[in-house]
Amino acid sequence: MKKIILFLFVLALSFSGCEKDDICDANTPTTPRLVIGFYDFLNPSLLKNVTDLKVIGDGMAKGVLFNGAETTNANTISIPLKTVGTTTTYRLTLNSGNSNAALVDEDIIKFDYTTKEVFVSRACGYKSIFTLDPTTPYTHTDPIAANQKWIKFISVEKNNIENENETHIKIFF
Figure 1 (tube, helix red, strand yellow):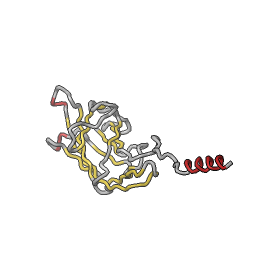
Figure 2 (cartoon, one colour; figure 1 turned 90 degrees about the horizontal axis):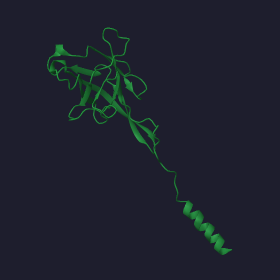
Figure 3 (cartoon, helix red, strand yellow; figure 1 turned 60 degrees about the horizontal axis):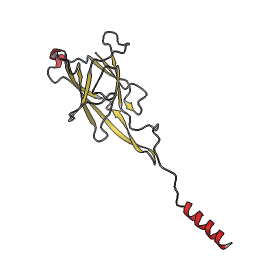
């Protein structure tokens, strides 16, 4: 009888050290990316596909990957913002890699924002949410000449970037 009680005591003691596994579910929302939609400048209600768009972050040698490739022909992209600091700069190159250099056009957009850390869970930790600056959310330039911008107009649709379920920025070209 003593052996059974001792066995049950050891068994109970061995289970007392177990904890719930802390694994962050893949469906848990994490730090959101900036969602940009591209629209036809002449018909602003129509989404428009970009042609061989390459997006390179400031100080980076390679472009943002879209489905494994550095260029995309989509009408919507999602790009990350830096969680350290208050600005992120991207070079958006239209017709990247085109053999006719006259068709390749690059614009630079610098996004200005504030960040806030939000606790998600013990397993997932924290995520950052962003708020675009209300007075100057972005600065749009062209590295060669200001009158050669391929982006005609930029509209901020949502200042608060809390998820990737909505378009935050609309670019018209």
